[in-house]
Length: 265
Image (tube, rainbow, N blue to C red; front, side, top):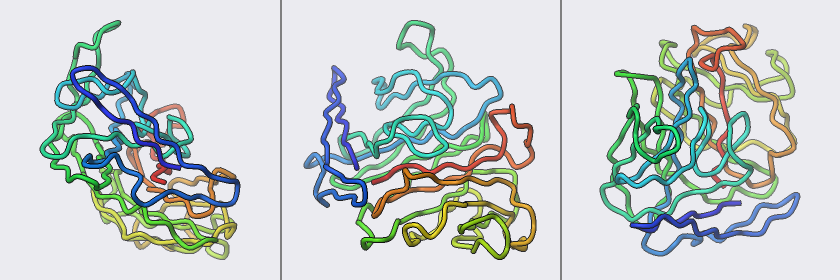
């Protein structure tokens, strides 16, 4: 299910477009855009130890409430914040400045700007904007999303690596468990700031996902694992993203190495 949220200036208004879905099917018209607009999802995966709330502005206009780390906006995913929908913002095409800032308490005013990116958007195309790392090392990656539906009985994924401190990249595994006999590499090696091509996996083929340093044997212990749930739906489209830092393993540290599934469709 994909929703489109439209930004109207100078006031901010959200327009919800809903596509129907059933338990075992996931359908959406390919032309479910606001004509002439671009669709944009913003994924702020820069992790700070204090885990401050942040806000998003586009061309200086606030478009979000206060958000927490690893919340795709708009929308949500698995092992993220946010809801259960594949929302996008409808944004005027052209050059747009996206700003991430810490707001002054009780206002829309910026206290500290922590990231920004100027992106060029084309009408009737769908994009995801990712932020990773922190402070002076913060980077942004704009990717065009392919929301075409996979065949029934399959789910479509793309894998992006936003973990900056693991040289050589990351391999992604999927299966019925986390061992060499129960999982298979489905993407990799994917270097930092890069992403795989789209791939599909059969529905009900497993729920166990894991990541390992690129080239590591499947018999080695994964650096992070995740078991997807019944939220994985036939013909849905996801982006899988690593986040945090490989060197941080403390389970109470928000910056620890993890990965998330972002709803795209």
